[in-house]
Image 1 (cartoon, rainbow, N blue to C red):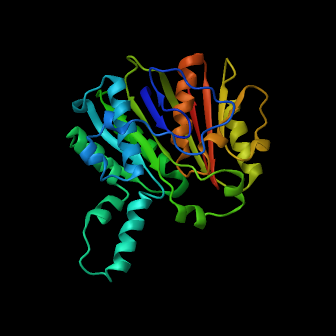
Image 2 (cartoon, rainbow, N blue to C red):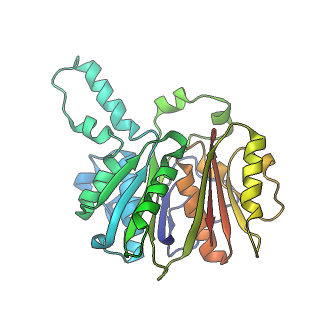
Image 3 (cartoon, rainbow, N blue to C red):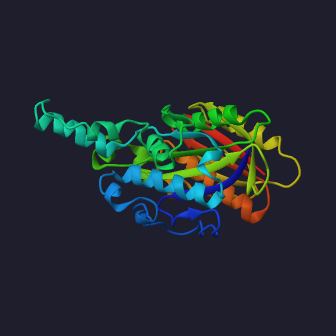
Length: 302
């Protein structure tokens, strides 16, 4: 599969296809650096949307616009999210309590469902293509990647808009108090990529995806060793999103982005965007290694 454009909204400045990747070293903003949503979403619609929905829709629309691909060329819209849109879920549950489960307006419920972002993208583009949202904990985005592979299999030309979105709320931060969240902030943001099965105008190629699940660091280390051992030619740059750098037996260039992405079950999407931009700029192979709890994924880019 070939990656043609990317967009990521995070604690970084917004990452776009046609702009240089910001410096990965140093400190990051404490909160997501939100773009000017009015450039992508009509203000009357935007004021009714939660932060997560605005981030997801904006990232997807920017990604499609920068690719030069028209909505009619899309074969699918694929989204991964673990928590869904939490602010609207919280609002709906609060309304149930306040109104004693009577006279509830449906808006908060409709906007709280996990497929709200993919649905909003389809409505904005007036697209009726295959539209899927995956919610498989730490492998939600990876499941969307696998479905993208199935959609693009074969010789028929087509494009897929692939991404992930998470938002945080104070209740989530309270619920997730743990050793992991003491070391990393709760992550949120949105990241999208435009992929196709044709190489024309691509910024890089996603050559392989490996997914596995383990809590054993020795097993994870062995899996990574096998993947790295298969690399031939130039040593790849590794984009590393994990709190366990000690299990990686590798001496070449490693870029740790875990502090930027934070504790985020779909952080693999943001890591993959950074990996794609790195591959585009450095013109060399890149491995993206992502971990969330026992969920691991590795993306090979060239």
